[in-house]
Image 1 (cartoon, rainbow, N blue to C red):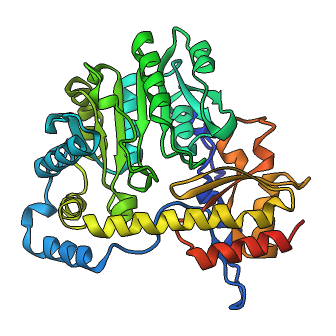
Image 2: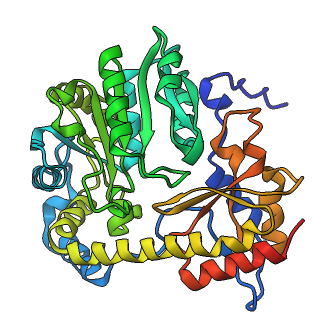
Length: 398
């Protein structure tokens, strides 16, 4: 008997582009790279090393000695971890943040999706600067929400007046990422305050993803948004424990928002994951209380890599490349070649042993800029590796 025809795929999910991280893995599948030229993977910003040994030992202790770490926990997260985030955030931002205004999630991507389900539904609009973080765009696509691109100007900074013109009756939020993924740029405090005022005045949400806040190069407070009276009515902050503590596989993130917002997000979280990873939450709590010096050293190393990348980029600038943005774990660049970036990226795998992502992953379809752009993530290559990267890109050309 002939098999029936498969059901048609007609949902928004079927029209959502796959993750470029997943797609890029296909470019290296089954390929071998010689010992004298090993693969340089600058495609992904997540740390590929495990947590420091002290934290791994604590995770083992948690697994062996805390029976409750293997059971369901509160939907909005471990109370002690929520309180620790509130305490440290209050000190870092010089403004009071209450434990009830913190929720723990299964990674920052879930923090984003949980928040957005409380804000927007099919037919609504969300403004996102370009180049944008592809998972934010993917959530919009799979939810039937229109991601409205907000072009960025010099330094990859979004323009406030342009954003104001893009707001319509269907606009529900402006989403900003600082330090930025994929551009790396750190948004000035004044710019964030201006976007906050715009969102407040237009009665829409300002969603601020600060996944990479631990690697901000500034020693000053990055913004004063938590000091604004009634910030809970406008601001929603997102955070990830994955980058600072290398807890990527344990999936621990956070939302900082008003209690009313978290009440709504709790419904989503209870339906999707019931509770965040218990072992991961205890690990994050221990890390926050005991690894301050270690995180500071990690930050110093990332900032040193950033300087090495900025200084070494002269080798590429001389060949027509442009450094558009750099910071956190990222450099966002423009290449000088006729080959568009979706073809150039896999070409580099085969000819230079370099895995990077094309700019088209971070730009709207049909964008003229995307085919000229590439993202380099330097979280997993040291300063010597950055030198090797520049050597390959400057001597091996299509």
